[in-house]
Length: 270
Ligand SMILES: [Fe+2]
Ligand SMILES: [Fe+2]
Image: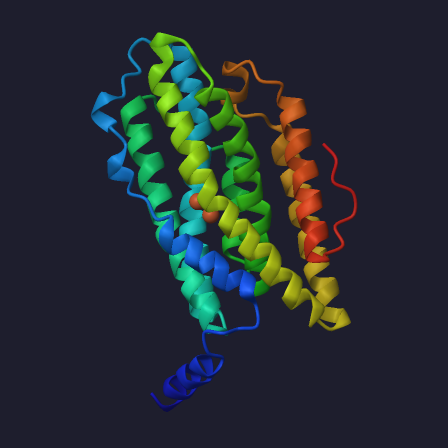
């Protein structure tokens, strides 16, 4: 009890003003931009006119993302416990609420599509590896930069594609695509921005040994990520997407995000 009180006082001592105005700004945005998954007119979604192959392909993409969202929910909750600064805890708590909403949103959509889709083993293994990281900074890099980044690139791409559809039978895809871009991916942008800023600040304080350990871990994860992006999900083919081009974009985005954090990540190519 004594230790807990002391820790809380130390955390509160850091106060709301962290000297990191970016986090305060992101926290304000998060509070204002909370949305309710129940507001999507679920009952009006109708995928019955969508060819089964396309429905299955879409469900396949969603199942991978759903699994990532579950990982993000547990990871962000763990980071809230260990964040030393009060403002990071407050922002982190909004991320936990965001991820819960994403899990709900993807769950409801999968239910609505009614097409079973397995999670790719390589993706499940990668997410397990990240969420089980013993070091909180490693967890933050793996989750808020590598996994969230991958999701962000894919969501924006898929959302734009679906949102632009002008086929009456695919109207429900259009509705979902617009929600994906304007709500889900918008939340992920805040998580990424927080992750990049926080990691950059923490990397600057690392001694050489810790820095090398982090870079080694990131190099391992980058290898896993590259292998993963080679194994295209069935959904990519169903939508007639250029998988190689899309994955090259994911890796290029990951590379530039890592560069912003100051982590040496070597070459990321597909
Ligand atoms: Fe999410
Ligand atoms: Fe997220």
